[in-house]
Image (cartoon, rainbow, N blue to C red; front, side):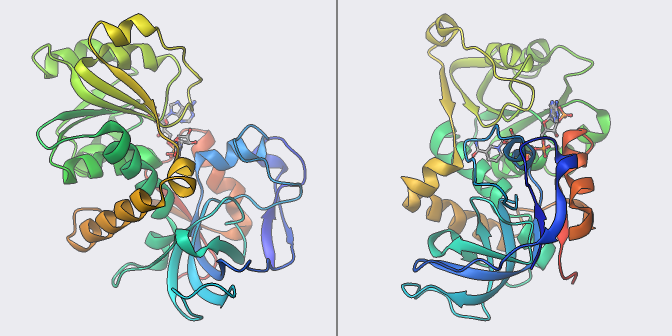
Length: 326
Ligand SMILES: NC(=O)c1ccc[n+]([C@@H]2O[C@H](COP(=O)([O-])OP(=O)(O)OC[C@H]3O[C@@H](n4cnc5c(N)ncnc54)[C@H](OP(=O)(O)O)[C@@H]3O)[C@@H](O)[C@H]2O)c1
């Protein structure tokens, strides 16, 4: 099969299209003929050898997929060949075939096309588990979302609105903020031109926010922490801007919490919560509350260009790689 292949650790420009053997599904896995997938910032971290998962070389990156079940492992009873599915993967999504655990494979709802399905799983599920189970966002609370037009950021905006919260979207350009607003943000802050904490305090009557969803970290983290009100929770989702240090005294003084959220935890240790998150997301999708944003589509051969949009900070929503358009 054709696949994007990582043969040595390094930058995304070292990735090449080549031939790989079609993977065999284990007893609890399904083999999927891929129709569409999407790139994630984590793919770039993984091929650099800096991600939590470090596959054996050579491997194909790619954390999600959508397609048709081609074959099922001996213990799989929930799917059969021909089913339309989307799945979360450890890696291997940027290829013509992918294997996924049946427990992390989900039926594609009616009306959802291949591109939307290929771009749905990682961003929406990661944001939902982070906000629902770690952030414990309640209706009527206020949530600040950093990187609010990015892959996970934009889904966090929509999920926060679906949960009945007020959303303050923060991003680096006016164009990105306009996208966040179209997807439901109530207020916006441009953190490349304005001071984040001051703006949050002005928008919240000096109370600060209840939850901050942070996929960025780096120099923004300090201001994000200061933007939390009494009892505020900052949910750490990613560190595209760098890994910050947490001054413990600033948690105690306002009874705040900093919580890590890893999709892998929910996949490995809390599958019931993962399942409930997916059910809620698919219900909201059916009700029209979630509108996946796909701004770019590339064929497999141009996967590196797709990834470069993320590493160059040029992407909005999701960037899809289509194997069979339609
Ligand atoms: N914990 C989990 O379970 C989980 C799951 C999925 C993803 N993640 C992590 O979440 C992070 C975001 O992933 P994603 O796929 O949503 O990425 P993305 O689509 O590229 O979005 C990242 C956003 O971060 C902002 N940013 C700030 N500094 C940046 C920089 N130096 N380079 C690129 N972007 C920068 C950008 O917004 P502005 O330009 O507006 O600042 C961008 O929109 C990654 O670290 C990823 O590993 C974690």
